[in-house]
Length: 211
View 1 (cartoon, helix red, strand yellow):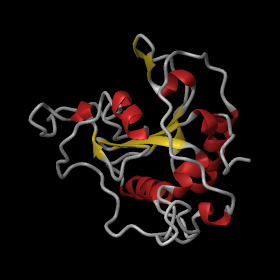
View 2: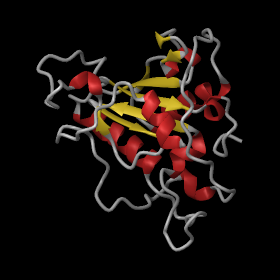
View 3: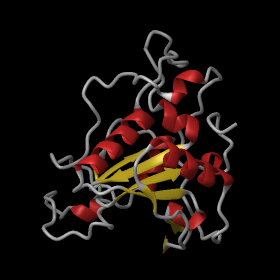
View 4: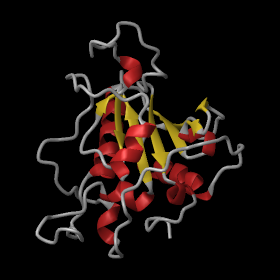
């Protein structure tokens, strides 16, 4: 079900995976200091909540909490969360429902690239608690993202959404042939910021990380 919803939402994702797409580390395992390891309650389900309309600029508690957490745990600058951005009837950007943070990090800056990679790896790493659905496997995948309610990440022409095993190319950046376009707007390509999209429960601070 998550995959079907995600495919409807990913109007800007591309199916082929050229080398330029951001990738998670090989043999990705638990990371030291992952806050998800301290939470023993059952882990949140991995879901994707599409946005449908503009809600107005009143900021949600979970989005303010996420902003404060990012300011305390990463380099970068808050670039906002709400803007009324509709794609069609009943189809909108997560920003339209104040469910996405744009976190300024510049891919051309080595320190910013390192901060972005650290954040992404931390959000998507498995935890050390054991997989509740497969006890023989180590770790719940995407543990901190699920605990926080993170449902999508866009960075450096690459897209990840709930239910995906790794990043895929972000459609804006690539032509029909799958090759990277020569002229790209850094903001549209998400090369000057990391986009962090939240579920409805995450934006409301109702997932296990925020309770």
